[in-house]
Length: 630
Image 1 (cartoon, one colour):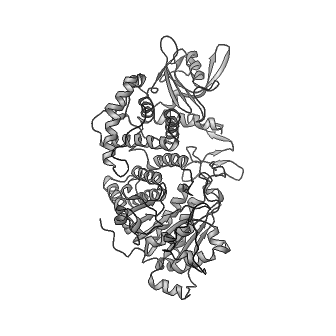
Image 2 (tube, rainbow, N blue to C red; image 1 turned 45 degrees about the horizontal axis):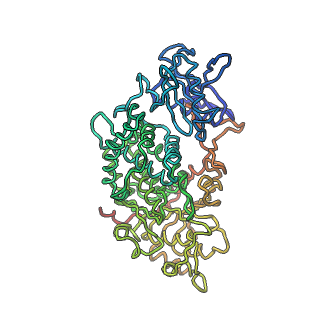
Image 3 (cartoon, rainbow, N blue to C red; image 1 turned 90 degrees about the vertical axis):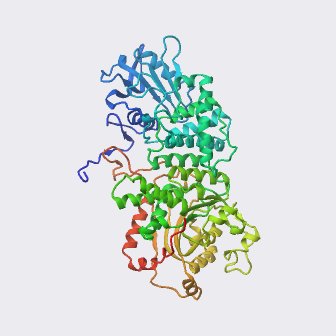
């Protein structure tokens, strides 16, 4: 017991049932069943008292167990009182599967005399209504609690989602499988619809939603076409005008009406504006990770690494200057570091105000700060658009993401990027550069602009690994006293052949912190096997001169950490905290805790910093520059 709250112990191999609180076997199928049980309560509105998990159904002389049965309100839990049956399968199970597909659900519906609706969820989501004769008819969805029939939702029907990952994945796979699109194309078609939905929630007026479909519409080709032409296409026209830097003026929706109708039916009840940012972010990031091939050394940076780095850097800056800090990611990829900066900026405001609710005025201040002081650059146009969309969903700054080869001088950038990106003026640079043997810079015009290729060498190196050159690239974006957080292979720190790179770093910046990350950290994205994060502070002119003269401050301290766990194993599967006897540690609601030591490194860094006056004095000049002009 802690603070008056009981911490329940879940034995290895067990999960706690959301409906009954009892322990059940921890299997992939059980976890999906429990997620849907939660959704039926929290999103569809059915009370737990009217739901049974794995309810036994008598089918002639045999008995079968339905995943979830919903009974008439307040009735006895007997077979004749079942009104809805739900079968929830793994995402890789097809509805046509002979053993686990929709036929199984329909047989359960037939055996339950009072059952009117059924829901099958796996690779797709399919809902059915029992009709007088013949097979159950396909419908949009089962009704929400209190409704007799499924209907087109109104603005007041929108619900906060607690998990969007499965929905996003299911929609993406449906577009990919049924629309004839490559995965990346399917991803962007889906994002167009997400933008349409967000716009409808934010800008729509009145009771009715445009981003919604009536069950009768989805059954007919004319209804599906009416949805597209009368509501969704005009919505996208407005989205395109609002975000001209993301969508081309001539860009159109490419989905067939039937596919579009399915996607609308999947997400129409979700409130994107009210759903927590981290829920939307987790779903978005997983979808991005599935579409990021890494063929140019680009790998998705895990959220815990982004948050650790951002929290460490934000703790070094005066809290009253955080809103004014010029922040750049010079190879931003999908925008993970920039999103983390926004999220942690919001958290600092919540802590300062001692509340989890930030008012509209503060949100607008954060939006304004992001729009003038948060910048992302990347050479990959797919990633630029992905990052822009990511930032829109998290609070903005999306207008400051540019397609730029940041290894080139600003004279070779686009005019817009050259005018707006704060080259040499950034307070903070946070980045995860592309890496790998196949990602090398060999353009002599580029290499001649840098000192690293010729550092401690008889002649300048003709080819240079991208991750090494980006150390100097990132430093060039910083003003004197600016702070760099960068993900690098730990070979840069200990490989004898890279001594010249360490020498260059120590002549140009002070090493503040070095964090060796677990090997498993990038196992999901397939990134670097031995990753590290370095936090450095760029020297001013006087400090560079002292370093060049080999004048060393022997009292200088460096924070070092070696977290042993990343919350996942080498296959990318979650790993949870356990007691010595193997039982999982949970809170009073049965929620598990990831075994993730990366997430506590920032706390240790802040504690170390607070206990070191010398450190505090040495970074006090990091934010002396005037705030950026609007």
